[in-house]
Amino acid sequence: MSKHAPDHHDADLVLKLYDLRRESVMRESRDAINADYWPKNAGEATAILNRDHPLNRAYRQVSTYWEMVYGMAKNSIVHTNYLLENTGEGMFLFAKIEPYLEAMRAASHPRIFQHAEWISKTGEFADTVMNRFRTMIKNR
Image 1 (cartoon, rainbow, N blue to C red):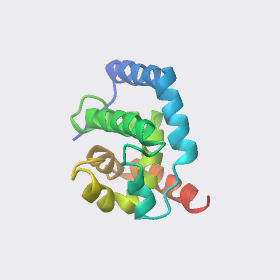
Image 2 (cartoon, rainbow, N blue to C red):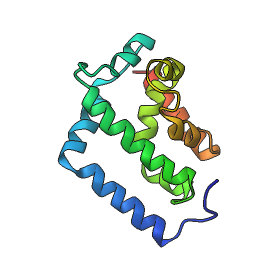
Image 3 (tube, rainbow, N blue to C red):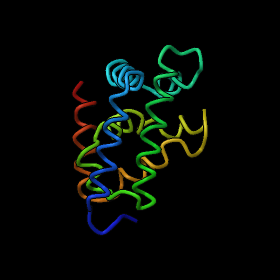
Image 4 (cartoon, one colour):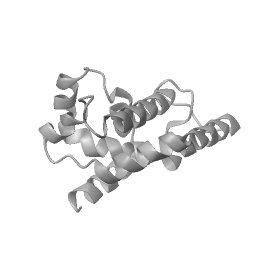
C-alpha cells in the first residue's frame, strides 16, 4: 500500500534520508558494501552475517538502514515510487542478495530484507530498477 501521490512531506523525508546517507560512518559503510560485497553463492552471501566478517558492521548498518527506509514506504509514510526514484542504492544491495535470500533468512532471521523484497515487487518502476541492477550484477 502506498500513498496515492507524493507531496512536499515525501520530498522533505527523502531529503532527510539523503542527509543520513552522507553521515561519515554511514558513507564508509555504504562504500564498503557497494564496492566489496559481491556474493557468488549462498555461502559467500551468508558469511557476512558472522560478526567476525570484515564487512559485518557495514552490512548491518546499511541493510538495516534500507529496511527502515523501505518500511516507511510499505506503511505509507512515504510515496513508494517517489522513494525508488530517488534511492536506488538499497535495491542494488537487495539485488546482490536476492538469489540467496532464503539462505540468508535461514542463517539469520526469517524477516531480513522483508521490506526490500516487498518494495522490489511493487510494480513496473520497481521491476525496471531491479532488472537494471540484476543485469549490472550479472555483467560484472
